[in-house]
Length: 171
Image (cartoon, rainbow, N blue to C red):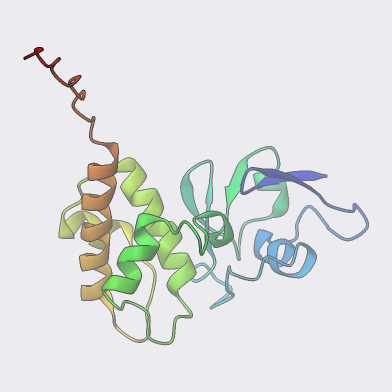
């Protein structure tokens, strides 16, 4: 069985995985992608959120068979230390993480939100980000999502053409 994770095909040994195995355990235990966290195991907290075909998905209750042939994005594929995603930059700027445990799932849910809705309101954010944060950083999460939305809009704004310099007259 092969999975497409963070844009790369990842073969899975058939003897190491059962199609009923939750995606979370395949990511963490088989593929060593440990950025996605186990929180509750019942899809309530969102620490295990990844994106599948662009949509947020709780990987702790999603069987491997449900994601075969789909594009999976984990936190490892959102950005890199050299080129962080706008959300990751905003998370740092607004000092969102405290303990940090829920952050990878929260970032993946926020990335899905901004892809669907590039200018979310606070109500949009509250409706889309159902992840639990024991540290209670929800106001900072909202501020960071708004900041990232502004940064992404500036990045995607069309640039005005640059005019060629005027020719000089000979004197």
